[in-house]
Length: 280
Image 1 (cartoon, rainbow, N blue to C red):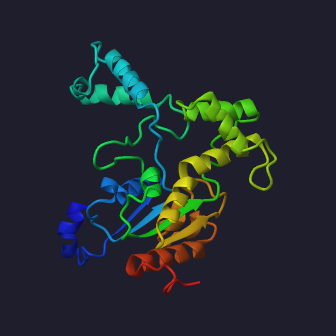
Image 2: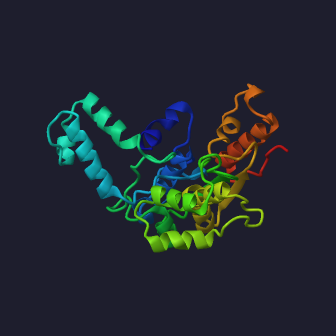
């Protein structure tokens, strides 16, 4: 962002009128920017668009680090017990250790995630937003998809399967915590929200990983615009085709929706109000 501020004028841009845009982990990054330094100081942007903001929950960081050290020790055949020793591995060794640590992860997770602590990220974004410790002078647009975790848990058929999915994805959760989650999301059918154990698990993690983040941002910012994407199945990432559509319409079912979305994005980046001149 500092480079943008320094050079944007060379491309006809305005350093006082910068909009940042991110989807999925990029949206999670935007949440961290919005809450940077607990809301102290200034940020080098005026507006932010976050689509399906999410980030891996780093709830077992010490266990993961120890596992990485153990894995890394197997690669060169010498002990690796510190970050400094990890840095001393050559590129191929580090790539191999990284792969062996990440590949056994649950589908859709990567073991590593943002860690709170220190000045830039004193707490996770959701906590900072709740406490009012964020940059409140930024105009924000935030979005989520209708079924973010759709299709992720095809082998979930029973309550025991749902329980296992929760434990696998939230490794530090207590037995009482698992029971609380299952009580919040009762056995199916549960109205129109979900009708099977598979869609029950999808709903749980759609909300935990993405939709709750959108709500945190939406509730914190009075000058926030929200939308819900539900074209096709509304699965995570499906909206990207519409966001970046460049005229090749064969890959999308409703190209006019892409034009409308892009109008909204452009108007927001120009005026902070996506409805100013959006077509439709």
